[in-house]
Image 1 (cartoon, helix red, strand yellow):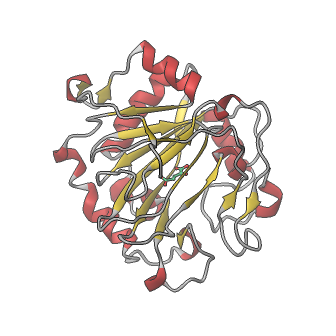
Image 2 (cartoon, rainbow, N blue to C red):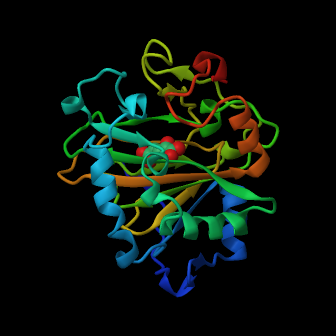
Length: 278
Ligand SMILES: O=C(O)CCC(=O)C(=O)O
């Protein structure tokens, strides 16, 4: 890889916390709107992050019963033997375990979503994502989140990725293509495998103009991205796990519209997945 562009925010964030509130600046609000992404350091303290670890491990080790397709590998088809997983995905952890409802990540993320959005932002879904060490193929295919979701009039979204481990180029940190968030047409998304019944994962073709920026973050920091920015992540060539807790906030009415058609972001939803692809 030649000289990859990294967007590193070295500012400590703890002074921005007041109770469960995290203050962002007008410049950051403007950056999110213009560039479609943001990194915030010191989002959670170590004392706040540590209690999330056992839950993360519980789900990623497949210990939560009854999840069916909500426990899967985002880089391989459904049905891949668990011991062969490389990019482990556990959807909707607080739906399965009420102990996670209203957790500190949710509370602080809500405070930032409220600053980023002028309407009413509510949490739409969450997921745990883990890249096992030395799994070069643990790639999250490049996509726009909106490509995965039903069409709604209001598409506003802020997706928070809380680093539960340090995340860098070697273990496959998030990568974004700034500017793609302003494209008027959503790109064509195709199933990565045969169809959505075989694997949840969608993929887009990259354009020659796409410029990738890597977003390395320390444990306890977040990146935030919008629904249109082209993003994904590379494989894990390191001996360290990459552990991420993802939580997406959307407009209150958009979430109501999703639920009205039975769309909860569970991979077990009874919806026509092939119709949903944009
Ligand atoms: O964190 C990653 O590797 C990708 C996650 C992602 O695509 C998302 O949260 O929308």
